[in-house]
Image (cartoon, rainbow, N blue to C red):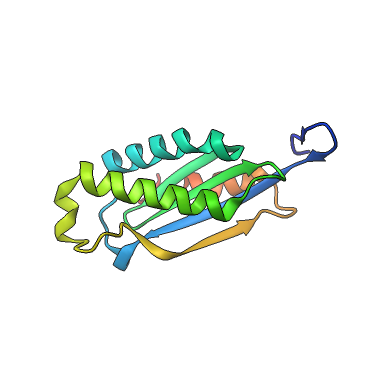
Amino acid sequence: MRDLDNNNHSVFALYYHLVFVVKYRRKIINDNILNRLKEIFEYIQPTYNISLQEWNHDKDHVHILFKAHPNTEISKFINAYKSASSRLIKKEFSTINKQLWKEYFWSRSYCLITTGGVPIELIKKYIENQGGEKI
């Protein structure tokens, strides 16, 4: 059974699987960039009542499993995260500017899926196995 959160008037378990793709599907995410992207996510998440559950990547995209509250404005969180992370990553890792010559790091689109009845452990396992060969 899922862990339920609560507030004064409700009990809930809201899990989302979010995928961000690098602009032009450029394969530029390495461990240093990934760690910085995760730090930025963890810095912004409390403002939006979000908690990170799982995080992984491939060279051109990031998978994120997070938990949210009913009052979370997810679209505002996504916009804030994409804007801040894009600006900071392009500033701190200036070598990627050759591959991403415009101001954007992320593609304009993203994939957001509610987890429904799928066991969270199954989704975590899927995200853990992203990016490269696992032996």
